[in-house]
Structure formats: structure tokens, C-alpha cells
Image 1: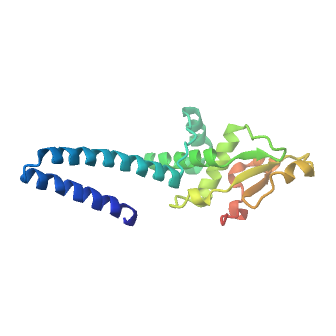
Image 2: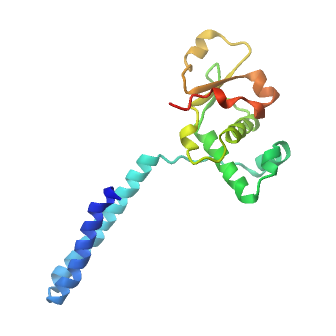
Image 3: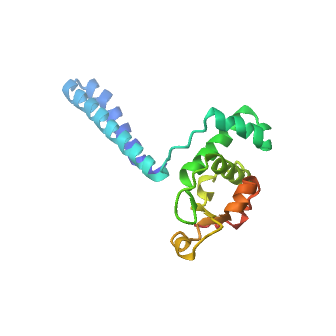
Length: 186
């Protein structure tokens, strides 16, 4: 409220000034004041939108298609039990995870298996739940270790914000991945 207080005071003074000027028959001044209100209001809306976008940094979600929803309904027991509105929220959280968290192989290439990436995201959503601070708890990324890994390639992507899993673990059951190792502080 404090950051908008100055703007609210400015608009209030300008809007109250228009009828006062009209009551004293200063029609030209009232018209100029009215135009000034519109110009300042347009400028402030633009400024507020810019600040909001900068502060909250909205990102697009990965949209799940009908095929994704079908096999999620078939393969994920918890998804099929959700109500229609909870499914929409669940899909949004999966989309947010997929758009914000890179899933890479230890060689540095992006992981391309969409189905397993969605299952990985769903296991994270199940772990976190429907908390309000979902975006702040996202890991910086997920590194999938390849079985024939060389040490030099993986050193480039080692950081506290990444969660490491093996390709074998991902292939067997991405739904049962242990997310408790994630460092949520960063």
C-alpha cells in the first residue's frame, strides 16, 4: 500500500481539483487538469505493470496436451483421484516445473524424454504438495547421471541448486525419486 500511496494522493488531488475548477467557471483549466489526469494515469499503469512483471518474473508454463493427460490419468494413481479443478492446478504446477527447471544429462545435454520429464515433475509436485511457495521451492535444475559418466563433463554443472539422480533410477520409476536431498535455501 505504501508504494501506491503517493500515486493515490496525486490522483485524489487532481480529481478533486476538477469539480472545484468547474465551480469557479475555469473550464479550460478543468479540461487541462482532466487531460493531465488521463496522461498521468496511463503513465502510472504502464509503470506498475513494468514493475510487477520485473518483480514477479512470470514465466510461461509448459502446456500439457491431451495425450499427456491421458497417460498421466492411466499411470499416475494420485492424478486420477483428483477433482477437475485440482487436476488443473496439478497440471499448472507440472508446467511451471518444466518451464523453470532444466533437466539435463550429466554430459550437459537437455533430457529429451517428455514423458519421464513430466513424471519427474509430478513426483516433485507430489513431494511439495499444493503449498503457496511452490515457485520458491523449485530446484535450480535436475541432473540425470548417465551410467558411463566422465568426471570432467559433470563438473561444469555441479552446484547446490541441482538435484542429482541416476539414469537407472529415472528409467525404473521416476515417481519414487527422493526429493528430500534438494537444497531449498538457494
